[in-house]
Length: 159
Image 1: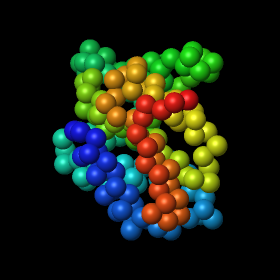
Image 2: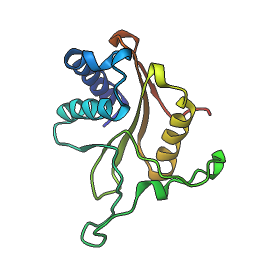
Image 3: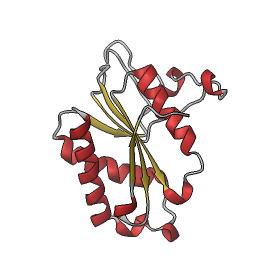
């Protein structure tokens, strides 16, 4: 998948999200980011056509399924020493990948515009997923009440 294809899929998925889920995208509804990530992930999955797996808050990384029944927690693999954060458990909002392989296409972080005070941490998180786990693309998506205001940025980011 190239950047142009991914960008098109994200835009089409956001269009669907705003068409079908407008109510929960309002500030006064104050819905959790996980709910929005799940909805957006489902729409992305519709446009991927079973080429890859789309997962939300995915917390496993396996190399050989039969060899590692439990898998490794992804948060243990990310190293935050460069940021002064140390090691911490972090999970991607949405990933596009092939389960049980090292094929990692995109890591997507979602933020509601009125809850974006940790934006720089999301940028850093995207950078680390790209650097340490070989994600081809890292994407930051900031959602607003109106679709036309949405922000889509591709990493790596300067933080």
